[in-house]
Image (cartoon, rainbow, N blue to C red; front, side):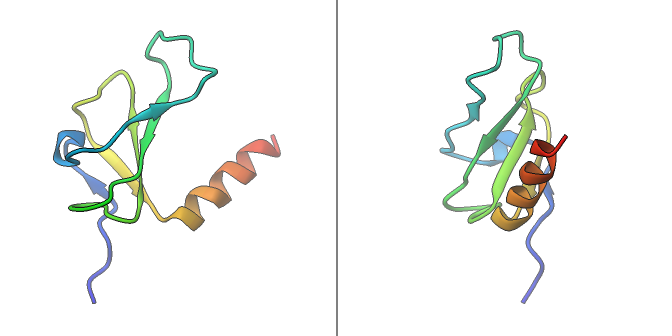
Length: 76
């Protein structure tokens, strides 16, 4: 079995995903957006992209690694 991808070169490669951003975002495009691709590259993973570059690369995380990251961020 091959390893899941760690990123996609363009978030446009993630078809039919709904990108979400935090309700704390000011709308100034200075945050990250997340999506959960159901099919294609990144299926079953969490995609994260920079809101300032929506056509740029998206990083892909397993749900567990993203949960670990956010839990650690909340401790600071």
